[in-house]
Amino acid sequence: MMTREQALDLFADPDLIGIGMAADAVRRRLHPEGVVTYIIDRNINYTNFCSEYCTFCAFYRPLGHEEGYVLEKEVIFRKIRETIELGGTGVLMQGGLHPELKIEWYEDLLRSIKERFPRIWLHCFSSPEILNIAEVSGVSLRDTIARLRDAGLDSIPGGGAEILDDDVRRRISRLKCTAAEWIEVHRVAHALGMRTTATMMFGCGETIQQRMNHLEAVRRLQEETGGFTAFIPWTFQRENTALGRLVREEATAVEYLKTLAISRLYLEEIVNLQASWVTQGLKTCQLALRFGANDVGSIMIEENVVSAAGVHHRASEEELRRIIRDAGFVPKQRDTLYRTYFLS
Image (cartoon, rainbow, N blue to C red; front, side, top):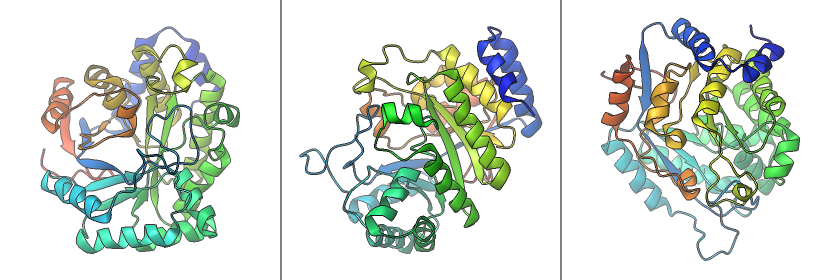
């Protein structure tokens, strides 16, 4: 297994193609069938009210702001119905950290969705959201996750991780949970039998050592629990954000591909690695399939958070299938747990 020192050496190594080939070899070992997957789902942002004011976010609004909203349940039901009609299998539901919504509101929402759409997979609520629900409700973290699970929550996305280094977090999201708190949410969820994903938003002014702190924290928890289904790195999008005025240059495609490949090499215990066409565009996403990635994520029926920061890449199912085929792979639709029982 790759050591931290070896990974740091690779970050300094100019041989991008060699690093990519090494990551591709790991991908071939983990996924010898030559399949690259994608999912049809929808991002539903149930509220944009948030009390944390992260400097990299252009989506949130403070409580009381005229542009703030909490979606009515009927609106959420309509979005889910449309998703199913388009062949979707799940929703990724996240929002801001609302300072007044208690756990009963979330339980009622989840139960209402499952009553109407029993087969839809609910991949919802980032670690900061879950911690916020627990705090606002006066409920322990374990009981919060268990109650949400019992109400219909199927799995937890990796949002809110950014860089799992507290020096970075204090600089870009000083009110957000600590790195240890983010990890603890996923540890507890895994202990309760739930699967989760891990993410990393890099290129926000962190050092390579701090980026490695993130990869190391994720690897340690995966070795402990085995609960992560996938790792999803993407780059900070600076347009329209306060942090963007300080971080003058976004990470390049070369930096993205190198970081993706090193992630594949360092996180061998996490079977799936997702490429991000939403932030990188289709061409770089296609290249990423030869740098260790075996998945291209969602067709994104709806996406509001990244687009608020100025990114407007779009892709249809056929476009994603085409770039997968043209890269030499077999495209297959999957579900949230990476089960590929759909027609090719």
